[in-house]
Image 1 (spheres, rainbow, N blue to C red):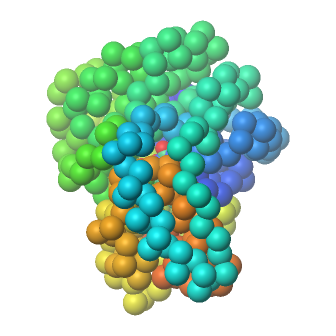
Image 2 (cartoon, rainbow, N blue to C red):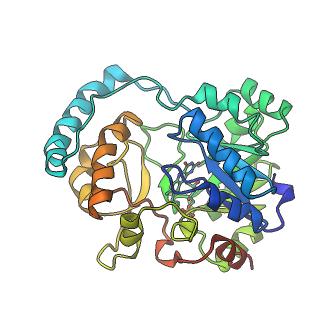
Length: 338
Ligand SMILES: Cc1cc2nc3c(=O)[nH]c(=O)nc-3n(C[C@H](O)[C@H](O)[C@H](O)COP(=O)(O)O)c2cc1C
């Protein structure tokens, strides 16, 4: 819960093994709000991780879910097949296998939306869209505070109509997937300060500012502009408790990787990442078919991570990636507060 925090710092949920239960607990334990990512996990895995967080801290924590989006299979199928062909040679070279495209639900939204009511979380946060108002009402009945990530005033209005308690304003500086509701739209370039000014003039809901926050100065500016708290991901990527792989950590520190872009190359959904050879090769060719593309590229990315190749993994990163530090997460969180 936002009002239970003694420090105005939310630890961003970072799916794919980065936000470990230890990281979530460390952020909450420091007085911030740790967020456990539910994306990509089975309901059983998510439940087990929530139990782990509960064992590590008695402070409030949240769970984050991906709101499923409708995919226009008929419109995208041909482009996905062509993209898969491009991947085959790359996969062979890595000893990886590209699966057949799967167009059904792989993220178990309904089961996880039920589960979050009973695993000890205080907050549920959503990205990629707005949960149905009926679902938000159920979460409220279970005592959960509901956060929704938005990237423009129209999305903010939709989240408010559905009953959100808190809006997470994700600026273009953010690492990882943009939360833009329409997955085929080109994400806007509004930063979190711009969003705070614009959305803040239209709502009285508490606002959490996300994107590019890596110093206490960044936090101070966001709070002065009306944010109730900041949400940080990239600042925690190199923390002791982060589950970022050895290759990911090396990539973030690689002096030859100097450019950050927003790319669909890895998953089909636009995401903030450090540019590497994979982006250079695939960016223009990738259809906006998340999560189908995500599943096609996953075996390649996993193989590249095992092989220590920074040019084959997704290097999710916000604009402040050079400021990420190898320290305990609690220290990082404390130092983010002015
Ligand atoms: C590695 C990584 C994974 C992320 N995964 C998620 C996620 O699972 N759910 C989510 O809502 N946001 C996710 N995000 C976005 C964050 O919630 C947040 O918007 C972003 O980290 C803020 O920008 P910053 O990285 O510059 O701090 C992720 C960000 C990163 C860097």
